[in-house]
Image 1 (cartoon, rainbow, N blue to C red):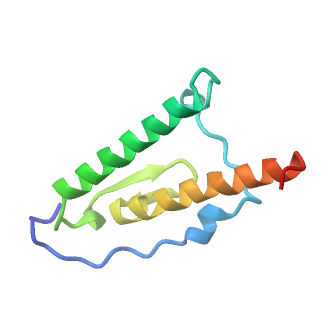
Image 2 (cartoon, one colour):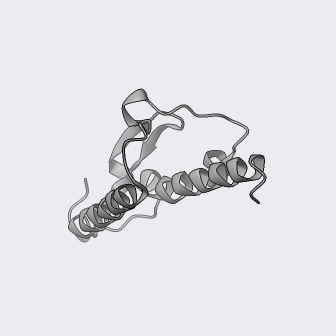
Length: 108
């Protein structure tokens, strides 16, 4: 990782690929919902995850995220900037999935 204060341009990321609902993506078993959590508990956990991400971002302010990479199960090898960009797309993908289910149930 580049030292504090280093500035780089975030790596471009094709969010459309992530939002393409014609390509099914199966989550690993260990993160599949088990139906054992209330909506409120799930929402609280999501808010805690956002706060944790905010704290992580604050602690890495000014660093070069392009120097950090990891494999994504659906997108292949992506760097830190692309991971961060993918988070909003991931949540949007779930929102689209919920809309599809609501429409299928005749609730939209």
